[in-house]
Length: 253
Image (tube, rainbow, N blue to C red):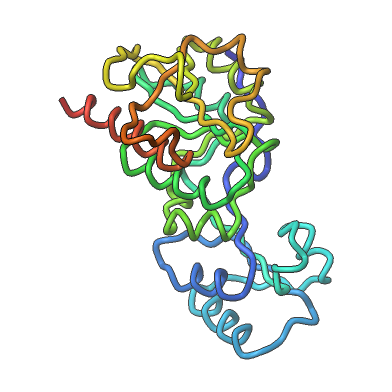
């Protein structure tokens, strides 16, 4: 299939806020690309940021406050500082599908609203060795400091695949030969008894509304996690971790 043009943000994660930016600059394992400071920003922490940037040889751009907010999209919390960090494994879904490995297992995040859940899913999926996590630009939190904190910094190195919407991602995955499964508690195949093809995707639905009805035409089946002692459901990040490490167990065996 023909790849779409990469979105300008598909290679970078934007960090904002003085403490998160300072911590990122002090982490030499991260490739910091662009640092913008509001012209009216000042203070001790800002001086530490300037010193850390100088130690890295990173050029600092002083700009109007609205230019900082335009990148952070969070004027209340950016504190006049934004930093672009290269995320080497983040790319457009279509580009990734153009160079698809023979065996691939991916998560798809559909309608999640809690940044902490996104971060924990990224951490679990990366730790379990999944090939990708589809993070649509619409209907899911952006990779904010809250996501990064919940992932314990793994978000910078996670195999994030960007798509405009989850429906468009489902279309692309189906076209590429993926079988797409939804997770739900009832009328589904037990995770530990199911057989999965070499290319499979698992949709993790939103915390309140679950899976979007618009995805129904693309789903090849439903998977459930068996629960006991009256427990009816799991937090979406916990459910994702269970599925991720069951897939990892099968890969190892």
